[in-house]
Length: 262
Image (cartoon, rainbow, N blue to C red; front, top):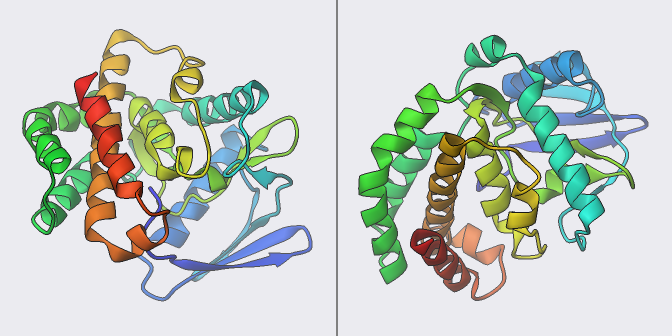
């Protein structure tokens, strides 16, 4: 989940990237370093190789490629994106992933943000989403506890997926932590970047994964949760609204309603 305000500055060096987090960053340097270190061990080449951690500064190897955000996504792009995400979600052993702190914007955080912010806005779609959430919340929370733990990137922004002409690699892990596979897949397809300025075919992308019945059911619920969360942000946060084209909130409301009706 892309946070509302950037928490870091990025300096591009020959062969390396230096990421400097702002003072008071809530654990982001440690989360970034932990994820990069784990992936360097269990899925080398999928993410930047960690070079050093010094206070609020993480230095990592520079990766080739261009962001998928804004690109016209072909089946080759979707194949590579699915391979990268699938590799991420299977890379870290379950026992190791289970010991990680929960990712930021996991179910409990997202539900709390929705309830806290929803009092500042009102719309038929939002009210419909809140009625759905009242019934779905227990199952969403239970799934976070019982699902197979994975290392979650916790940021579905397609700008964080780099295409080098053959493969996709991942960057930005400052919100990463323990998660579950349906939740992470839902974030990718429901992130605003998947449809505001990029046309990600959600069905085609998700069809490249093999999910059991319980995972498939949770995936739909998680997609609804993310759609509701984005609608709340678009209707209560002026910065989120300003960063997106006019009419985005209305389109998001329609997207949420379609998911709720499915």
